[in-house]
Length: 168
Length: 276
Image (tube, rainbow over all chains, first blue to last red; front, side):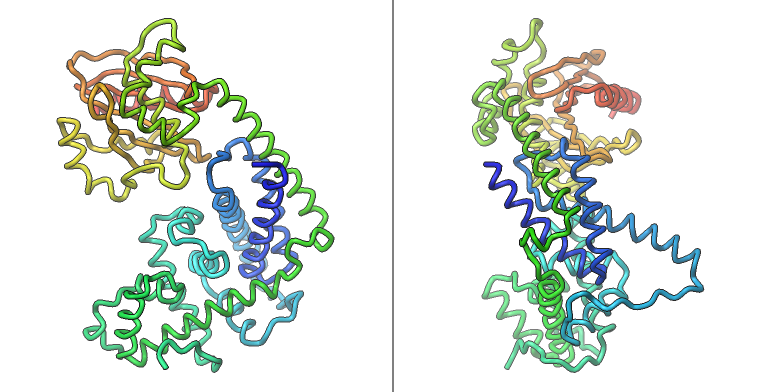
């Protein structure tokens, strides 16, 4: 692999990581922080990456760990300042109201449901690869995906939007 | 109420695959036809498809600056460049490390065949002043070929290994419960059977917290006489081997540093203590 190839590959993966972080957090600053934490950890662990292995999966696995660590830290912080409500931040880029509703509903789900849904939806990652990213057996992953999607549907609720008809 | 009796052949997995479009066309049509019999279920699946599409669209809308370096956060750009440089250095170092190996080990497929043919055993003397068992060389070769593979390191995952226990027992000539090394911080990834000139070998692959992999190769011993652990540095990694309870063991790690030498010692002790 030439330096050019590797550089292009990594740049592409960083874009995927940023998208993933944006959908998970809905906040540009938080998403950028997640990406930067992920890259910092990847640099520290670079010696352990095997050149023949899947670079994208490796980076997403690190991103998953960073995300979970942040969720835990945030939980502690929130518990300490439970009286102060966090103001809702508008996203940097305007998104259609239907998309906003789905993003907000996604955000209401526990992270162990959120991650499988987003990994599969936006990265077009295979179930097996995504299961490895979140470090659970495939069966557990599939059940989280199913429950997460069902929960997302319930939260979005009676949203009236254009359905993709399976059967006409 | 959803009538589950009518659609009992449609599993949750089928539904996820319908949402992601990952079923083959025939099965897809069959499942869609079944789902369509239940308007409520149809509505649920259609919502899931719409939500999935919305997430894809939102991802593109939220991070529209894409690969344009001018639009990328300077710190992110800096880190991306640093990571590229580190990974590139790693590839270069590995290439020079690999260049010292015999040509056949550079190609995984060829190496797999050669493991089966026992060639690693023949080449053992290239690297060692004193002889050591052929199966240890086979174990080291198999570690190089399989253990570090992120995609398909094993034939049987830790979860499915129990299903294969009968087959493993038949090939190895006796029952071998998968050695559990959680106590020393090693999680079982899975296992496979290998052929060698000395007979069948079971290779168990483990991963520690940092993602480092070790493999433990087990074969039936010709004698019940135990042999104390011996250590050796091979081109493919650090090896420890011993005999106990009618089995020969070889533990291999690609990293020859002190901490892993320590964990090899720990594993040997744990296994010796348990007499798996």
